[in-house]
Each structure stands twice: as structure tokens, then as C-alpha cells.
Amino acid sequence: MSNPKKQHYVPQVYLKHFTHESGFLFIYDKATDEFRKQTPANTGYSKHFYTVEKNGEKDYTIEKLLAAHVDTLYQPVIKKIERKEILTREDKVNLAIFLSFQHLRTPAQRKNYHHMVDEFYKKTSKIIFQMKKVHGQLENYNEHEIEMLEDIFENEKYDVEVPKEQSLELMLKFSEEMSTMLSNHNFVILEASSKSVFITSDDPYCMVKEKWSEPWSGYGIINTTKLFPLTPRHLLVLKDPGEKMFYMQMDKSQVREINFTIALWSDRFVYSSNEILLKSLVAKIKKKVEERNQKRTD
Image (cartoon, rainbow, N blue to C red; front, side):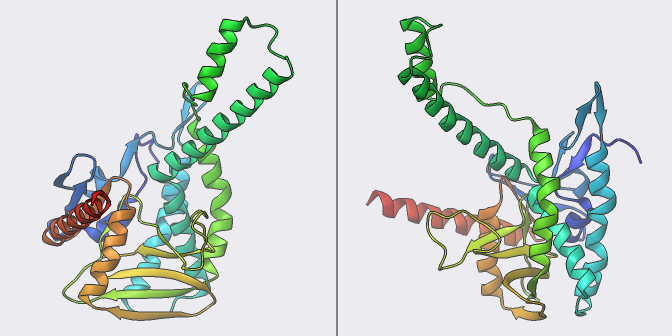
């Protein structure tokens, strides 16, 4: 296997299912507010996203692991779902592994991890500085230097650099636990009506908090319903623990509501096999956001 510089955080084998018959994906870029079309090969990737340095040389082990042992789990299960077969325990485990890595491998998840570390480090640094000040442990600094340090720590006038190796380590460590928990859910496959399709994004593992979840709580496996678009026709729902598996038909309006969630959950890019649907969806989301902002100002 070669050492690819273009490393997909959304696998090509997955994106190919969301292409138009022309072979292109229709894409909305939230950052630039632009629509365009791209091939799966040129979508959902970042150069050296999983490459690390070892002994002064680039190490592609993680990229190769994902390509050989994670991305390959998707297609066999999808073929069974397209035939409306009941998934075996092994199928569920394989799909859960794919979902877990898809959630943990994205730029969005890396940014979340970096933000968490940054926040923790800065809060801790404030406490440590104040403790040293109170206990007279800053004798090596003059009054002006202490004032400068206090301003830096209290007002967080510095950046915390988090090596990507840390988020990659978290991905590898947590993926097993997460996939085990997901595989022990009831698997509900939603089927889109013939007049609609599911969209996907650069962060397709979506979570909707349960009504009983506390407002201050984060998004976890236990307190959320998990939504994952598998193909334009199929979407997986994981809500309750169990071993059941069944299919449900969704009408056009139900698919539209789910697509709203997928689009809003995206990090930057929204992908679809249907250009007209994508543009219509984005327009409706913009209208909703404008209405919400208007209510806040009234």
C-alpha cells in the first residue's frame, strides 16, 4: 500500500453512495456559503490528517489501519441493508465499528478535543497561578512581571497547542468502547420514500438529546438518539439498548426533518446526491435561522 497524502476523514467508499449518476457529489460549503460539485476522491479529506512523525520520518500507520480495517466494514453490511436483510450480530458489530471511527476521526471531533484540552489547561493554570501568588511562591518575579503574568493567565492571552497525536490516541482508545456500546442497541433502519433522499455531511454521526437529559449535560452515547445516514435511501437510528432490528418507511416530510438535523450537525460541508434538494434545504435552514434571530431581537 502506498503512503497517501490525501487522507479521507469521510471514506470514499461511503461518499460514493451519495453521488449523483454523473459520479459527483453536490456540496454546500457553510464557511463560504457556496455550492459546488466534486468527486468522492476530492471530498472529505485533509493532507496528512492522520500522519504522525516517528524518528524524523512520516508514519502512515493510522491511515493504513483505517483504510484496511475500518473502511472495508461498510460495504458488506450496506449490501444486506439494501436487500432488507436482518443483520447478524457480526454485521451489527462491524457497522458499529465503522460508525464509531467515523465519529471520532473527523476534523469536528479533533476540534472538540482541542477545545476541551485548551479549556481545561487554562482553567487549571488560573488556579495554580493564584495559589502560588497567595502562598508567596512567585519570589523570582518582580511586581511588574507578576502583573503581566496575572493578566496573561486571567484573560487567557495565550494559545494552547495540542499535538494531533493526542486526539488520534483518543480515537484509537475510545473506538472499542464506543463500538461495543453502539452494537448493543436496537438497530432501526429508516427508508426514505421514492420522492426523497437522505443527505450526509463531513460529520455524519448526529446526536439528538433525549428529553430527560439535563440541559447542562454533554452529548453522550446514553443520553442521545444517534442518527447516521447510511445511503441516500437508508438511515440508521440507535436509541434504545437491545438486540432487535427492523425497517421503517419514512415519508417526504419526515426525511426532510431528519435532513435538517444532519445539515445543522455538519461541521462545514453538507453532501447530497440531489442538487435541487440540497439548495432547497439550505434555503429553508437560512430562513429558519433568520426567523429565530428576528425573534431574539424583537
